[in-house]
Amino acid sequence: MTEQLFQTNEEMQQALAKEITKHLSSAIRDRGRASLVLSGGSTPKRLFQILADCDLDWAKVWITLADDRWVDPDHKDSNEHLVNDNLLLNKARFATFIGLKTPADNPFDGANACHQKLQDIASQPFDVTLLGMGADGHTASLFPCAEELGKAVEGSNLVCQGVVPKTAPYQRMTLTLPVLLNSRALFLQIAGDDKKEVYKTACEPGDEAQMPIRYFIRQKRVPLQVYWAPKD
Ligand SMILES: O=C1O[C@H](COP(=O)(O)O)[C@@H](O)[C@H](O)[C@H]1O
Image 1 (cartoon, rainbow, N blue to C red):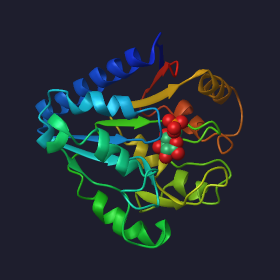
Image 2: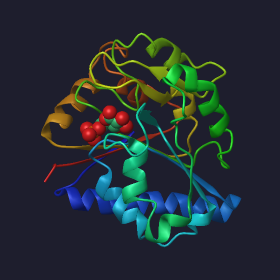
Image 3: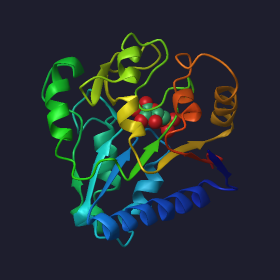
């Protein structure tokens, strides 16, 4: 695991964009294509805007989400909406985006169709996975105390799992822990002093199910690269 602390939020966003682009470029060079798994929330918006202008053969890049709220893709709280509005523009408009939302009424009914859509992503293991973290220690939509957490971290035949958080609004779809860890590079992007404290607590001993980010901090499969900066 590595930790990088930046003086400003912009420095972090620029550094992370450079690092992600480097991994995607190597993947394209070595395997002819690349895959990128993104998180939503407020923290990565600027990163997406920077990435949208990065020089990369975006037509060879497949993008999906670590999780999304089960709302229409044009809803203001949809992670798909965030990606559409901030990343899939300019140079990055040639990328192939596969969202998690389906027309089903809820993520449980939508799980099979979502699983099928994700089979189309052209490069697995994922080349880059970007995680965020909530104030309750959730990451992706692996929420503490959610009934579905056990299934989502143990994995099954499905790559995704419907979740009803007890600590946040909206039903969600999340990629499962084994699928998220099936990545060549894994980044955790967090901003603000409050999140730094949550992260410090997560690094201490304690139940993983209480702070699911611990599954990623403690695993040995792929080094977790932590990027932190003030909110600005
Ligand atoms: O609910 C979510 O929140 C987390 C963190 O969001 P932020 O606003 O604190 O940056 C995010 O990682 C996750 O993808 C999203 O669904």
